[in-house]
Amino acid sequence: MRKLALDDEILLSIDKPERYIGCEVNSVVKSREETEIRFAMCFPDVYEIGMSHLGIQILYDMFNRMDGVWCERVYSPWTDLDRVMRERHIPLFALESQDPVKDFDFLGITIQYEMCYTNILQILDLSGIPLHAEDRSENDPIVIGGGPCTYNPEPMAAFFDLFYIGEGETVYPALFDLYRKKKAGKIDRRGFLRRAAEIDGIYVPSLYQAAYHEDQTLASFTPVDPSVPEKVHKQIVMDLTDATYPDAPVVPYIQATQDRVVLEIMRGCIRGCRFCQAGMIYRPQREKDVKKLEEQAVRMLRSTGYDEISLSSLSSSDYSRLGELLDFLIRYCDGHGINISLPSLRIDSFSLDIMNKVQDIKKSSLTFAAEAGSQRMRDVINKGLTEEEIMDGALQAFRGGWNKVKFYFMLGLPGETEEDVLEIPHLCERVAECYYDNIPKEKRNGKIAITASSSFFVPKPFTPFQWAPMDRPEVYLDKAHSVKDEVRRQLNQKSIRYTYHDAWVSVLEGVFARGDRRIADVIETAYRHGALYDAWTETFHKEIWEEAFRSSGIDPYFYTARTRDTSELLPWDFIDCGVSRSFLEREWKNAQAGTVTPNCRERCSGCGCRQYQGGICFVPDGR
Image (cartoon, helix red, strand yellow):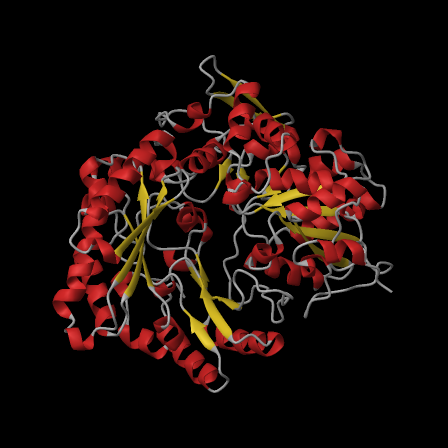
């Protein structure tokens, strides 16, 4: 009989104890005796966020279909339980078996965003696993990282035994077969890591060494052994239709951030926004067959009991058979009381007919990711969106009964001027005027409500902006205040609400995004002084990080505020993400000239992804 790792006294004293007890619908329990490899799959944030992550659901399902492999889940304990576990010396445990994570063969951590880095150290610390990979023994789990942040793993390299670069469905069987040899005593831990480095997509940080110039830039990054590859190539699944996908995803006890069935319709994006890392690293665009999607949707809805289904992709409007898929879903869902959610729709391909059929969207606001207020800046970032398209899409929405609009913008984009900044409130004002000028009073669904929010631009690896500088926090805040003041000057100011993100958090994200191995000391120092859940406003402590940089002798603005020359060796240059450096350099120049690059469906721009021999590169509609 399974015994809970936490007793009733603890469970009754903490917030949301359902986070820690397991036994959810569709969770998998196997026999320990018949299991060869135990894998603890970790999302280093609170349960509700981790349970919303599709990637973990896919790998959880895939691993548990393998003979002899049992995959369980683990999430970051919230601060109340973190305190109790430290006081009572309770080791971190996996949900399904409630066994200590330290007893597993692998601890796999998905790294979705930079601000979870201290939570990763929390996971290791509470598990009783040495923070530094070099200090681990033969009996410690192999700590493996995956996810988008591994496209620059260097700030966290000291804490991981290896990283998996790319999509997780490809080389895990080979890695598990190699581990079985270790478990049989044929190779030791070091031998396992050395041979793992020879598997495509696997990066073992301890087998590479970095050297630096006097100006602190990277001088060289080389393998320590001739058998270790100089380049690590990302892994990619070209046939999404037949790729593993969970028919029965785990259903949480408490409401998750994304509390619905998630149907992945495609991967990749054709658009080429120059700030967007996902749009580059997940190239080329690949679609799932519509009939397979219909079957998966029905199976998942039946196995979970959810009353909502959401389509997952970077740009759902670009799925070539969206209308056909939606026609099927509407027929099925209408008869079963199920709502359909359509995120990631582009305003320039807005379909009023489709949106009117999907009733749940009418109940909420309409979200437009304009990214920049001025047309000049939208051309700089290659958004591929004109003001005419914005106004036309908004007008169609207003005529369809919507009166709530959300706009997402970025401040601090490369080449941004004061005029560009002030165009954010001006665009919002023009949208408000469009509503009042074109919708008769008797047909209005109340007053228009526009919410504009701005994040601060953070350059990411493998984007054309990887060489661009970030603004310092005081500059960011000055720009945000300018926007807020200009909103108050607009005729329809009462209809416009403006919010902006924390500037210092953005700077910290920028350091982690383009940092090198020297940043590990800063992260560890901050963690040991109380930094945890840094993505959460209520638990973020700026002063801890400022002191960590000072005591480590690291200037954060070396990593954020300077423009990099395209000849500089970057910490992530050893990774081949499929998009060529020459393409990124060409797009960086196009950005500086304000030149728009057509999307992949209009014209191939030679980004390098034809090497994968499929997807949008070879079939114009992506099928």
